[in-house]
Image 1 (cartoon, rainbow, N blue to C red):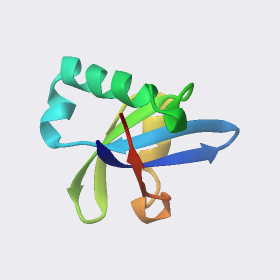
Image 2: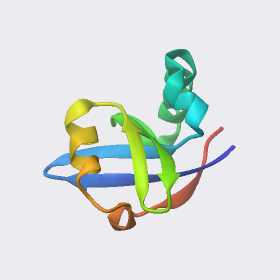
Image 3: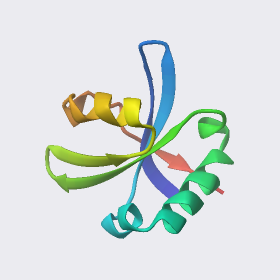
Image 4: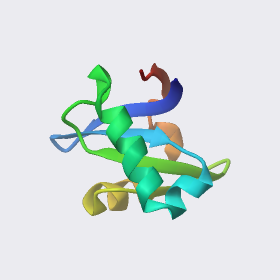
Length: 88
């Protein structure tokens, strides 16, 4: 499975962001499954996983650890180093 995401280190906190469809943000069980599957990837092991849904070109909605979500809500998404990852 291919996903779009990013590994970010900011203020001594490393976390992952994974883009998802809007329905994932509305369903806790599905969100938990996505996080569990991503956490098995070498790239995302041991870091908080934030889910992100792109509402418009420059606006994302985030779900996850509150301090990280609050941080992300206040930055331009173009600053995030997006890339593609393979998840088994």
